[in-house]
Image (cartoon, rainbow, N blue to C red):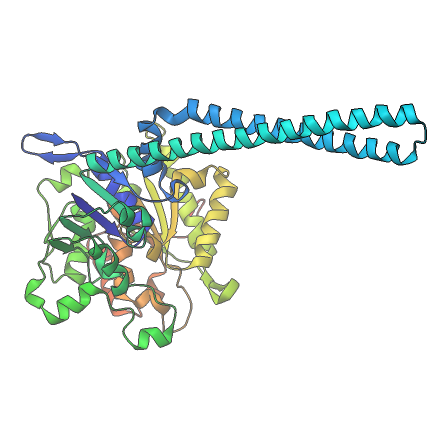
Length: 458
């Protein structure tokens, strides 16, 4: 049995989606039984059916009859409690009448009435107790059924997927589950302590998969970072046992026009394309010059502004992103772009700006069909089309944390078919790596100037 983990829900769901489609082998597609540990509300819609609770419900036949029976017990108890409250009120009323009555005949009648109500009260109390015990027995039987269903789901699972923190769930511990192999994806982005959690299940092998050339774990405490809290187990092993690290030098995600620059800038040209990647990643929109596999759009009149929390944003770039998607939809009406586009940026304020402008142009549903995220938040994910808004366009000699080559690497390697980089070339060229990108785009005739003095900028 295999346990596969990653630091974020998004990264885990990406793995689950691929496993759900099956593993391609020389003999065909192998289907695996996959279980996703996690809260359904935090899991991607496309893999919710593999969440443990959903699989248990399916095993129990959706448990609808049991739910109806349990509801009926609750309704009976509620009805009896209402009846008891009414009887108690009636007894109190009789007691008040007894206190005010002097007539002997009336006193006898009221005492008989109170006796009858008291007897009825005691009878209803017994019925409530019996109903409670019956429901408790029924609930206990339901719990036993759920435990058995959970055990069955686990016993049939080939692969269990969870976030690193989720892998420590009590459910796994109490069931005494063990795993032969543990695989941790995005291991270079995971703090060391988190990576240790899934190792408690007596695994014989642990495989760490990660890219030290991309973003490290996010650590907010500078004090903790000072003591290497942001160091991943992957990096510790690479530093101490470099011979134990194996480079996966073949990439199967990006169109060659996209992968050529990251390979050169970040991997010493050791990253190679898989067989037929030009054909595999070809897209029906590539015949349009504006929508080629790779374009750098130099947004000429763009200006960066300071927003909430000193995070910066660039309205011109946000508008350019909107226009680009509008052009895709209008010029290629026969293609469904829903769920194929990701819009990413290093800055949270720009992310907010992008979302609001897209909503204004396309309506609120656009946020469901296009994935908006920060570069950091999108690590480990991919889309057919990525629009990367760089934001920086000021006169400062610095381009901020955009200069971090690991963040740059993440942003440039998320697209499968087309990567559109939106940036201000003069500002970006203050950084050597970004200068290399701009010059490379120019030399490959992939650079286009965008001016809003034109009709639509493009």
